Image (cartoon, rainbow, N blue to C red):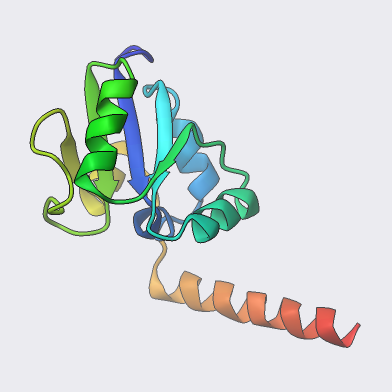
Length: 136
C-alpha cells in the first residue's frame, strides 16, 4: 500500500491495550497518511499521546458526525478505525469507514498486545514511581 491511500484512527481504549503504543503508531504511518485518536476524553488522549510520544494528525470524539466530517476533510481512498470491541461501533458511519477489531488488526500487523502480567507490572511500576516521587 502507498502512504497516501489510508486514514487510520485508533480508539484510545484500543491503543492502551498494545504493548508499545508508539511503535504501533510509527508502524501504522508506513501505510497510512493520517493517523489519529478517537476518545471521549480529549485530555486523556492528549496525556496518553504525550506520555508515549505519539504524533497524531487528528483527534475526534466518537460520534457519527465527527467521522463524516473527518472523511470529507481528508483525501484518502480508505478510512479505517481500529477499536477495542469485536463488532463495529454504532457511531461509525457505514459509508466511507471500515472497522477492524484490535485483536484482528494486531494479528495482521504483528503488534503485541499487553497481557495481564505486563499490565499488572506496569501498574505496580507506576505506583512505585509515584510513591518515590512523593517521598523524595
